[in-house]
Length: 135
Image (cartoon, rainbow, N blue to C red):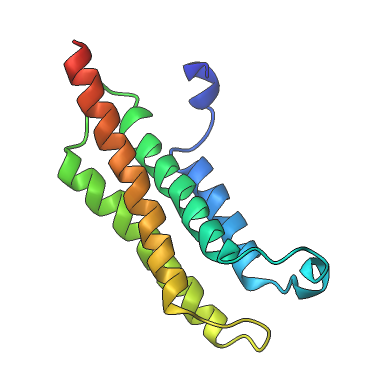
């Protein structure tokens, strides 16, 4: 994307927008609209992992690669911010779901949220290693 186009948005615009989408998916009741869909085992867990993979990817991009200066954030700090923030957000969503009568909180959901975030961070590390070896 064109950098001048991206400069028009606040730094965490895309990850915040994605987080709002996740909130809507995990808090509102969709049981009536999904009752006719075929049952796929563990589909909801896969969705959790994919949504948090994208969330972490957006955070990584906004923290590191979208910086408008030449400085880069150290990899340890990227890990702390890009994995812990989505994990804490997942904890918050599960707590909210616990108090909703039409939803339920599950520890496995939180585990798959974390797995998606760790997978995204692992992809970043592999990309960085690949870039270094390419030079």
